[in-house]
Length: 184
Image (cartoon, rainbow, N blue to C red; front, side, top):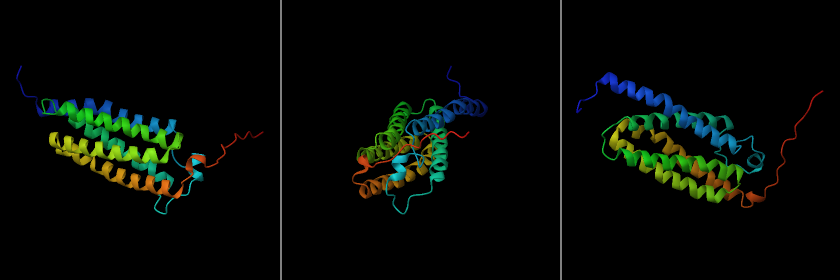
């Protein structure tokens, strides 16, 4: 039973896991954002003062889609590295940072808690860095795939900080929900 898998078997295992994990990670990220009403469609967020380096709204969707896809591929590479030392710990780290990541949008956009969200994003950054290092030790490509995520988290933390600084009363910012318009 100590046989080594062929390259074809390894590729098929990566493909099978990837077909499940990549869309799963992407859908979890999408669900978190949708449930929290994240982005410029959120009336509270739109009412906040924004720093000059805030990107256009469409960029967030493009960036997070690409990042979640890369995260899913990185996870797939590690999950399929059977027998790799510390593989279980690396997968656990990934799960922790992903859970923290998925909690950020509800905390920021739904609960309007800018400073706790800033602390959370710093925690996400720390656990994502540990995850990238753990992934790199198992499969270097998996670690490299998390590098854009780490860079985006640094940018997002700076953006979160500046929004908090510019909006000290953000929790009390008045906004109105768009009223449904019925056309006859």
